[in-house]
Image 1 (cartoon, helix red, strand yellow):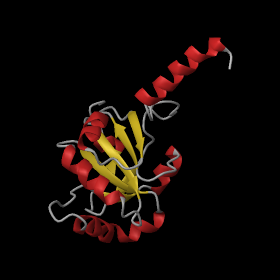
Image 2 (cartoon, helix red, strand yellow):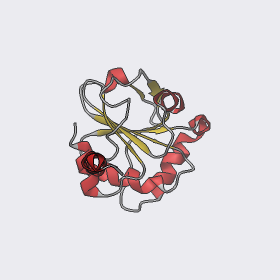
Image 3 (cartoon, helix red, strand yellow):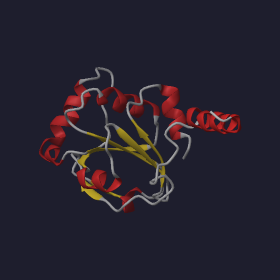
Image 4 (cartoon, one colour):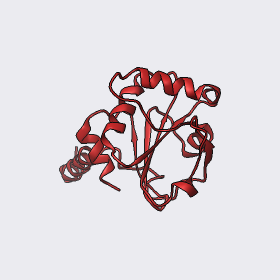
Length: 164
């Protein structure tokens, strides 16, 4: 390798380790697409009625039992920040309450109060390809950051949230 490229390579590798998940995401910083869904609690949730406060959208599916721990740990850490649980699978729409109950039964000390809803169309528009995928949305409805994969460490959750 030519010596003049080694410093550049070192800088690029350093950036990748300091800011994982922050490079090359075309959705970060742009307004979230319009959505409006009725959740398992009977309430309607949309970008319009979520504006004015930061919130999370947690994309998952009923068959992802390993996602339950992340859901509970995030709920435990976020305080007053709202969290919407959206399925990437349209088939989950008919079993949202059962899915919610199953998630609650997976943790004996805490019930998840976040609403569960079908978000398959929104996940498709946003290009969600992994679960869980968590979107942090600011009070104006803009995407701040996106995290793919489990998020269970309390400090990592707070670091993700504190970007808002």
